[in-house]
Image (cartoon, rainbow, N blue to C red; front, side, top):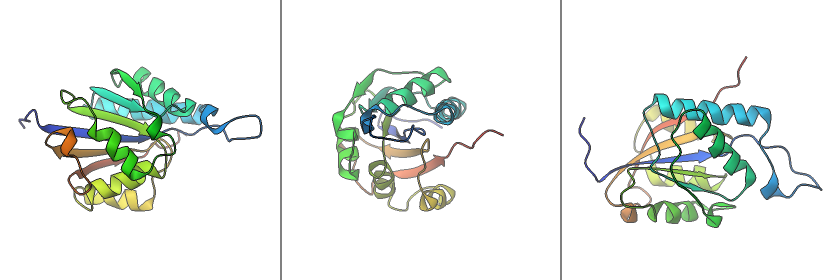
Length: 177
């Protein structure tokens, strides 16, 4: 299949499982658990096996999102230049859309790493029921930590809007035995 310079892939990745918050640990400082590191590595391997390399990465400033990206990169998904975007922390779906719309025009694949409820909301609104039935069924069941949605879009990033993408896949890492 030939793709044009206008064919885009947006990967929305919810951070992997973090340590629980507490009195002594600010929410932004929560690191990944061992299971979270395993989830992120699974996603990195899955992206590599699926043939998705990232041209640009937009990441929430939270420690758990930055650690997720490090594990994804170490597991095989090539690490592009990472831009920390404070709008992705505690983001709404509209914030996620705004960040994706500002992706570099020469980037074909953009990875956004953030949190719920912004990422699941953006996934649902961007695809608006279009794409893989199986992926939409999984999305209806939830968007757990470590899950990655792969959306396809054609056109400049600045034209990305709710209802203009298709949900190609939703991958949820499975615990190892």
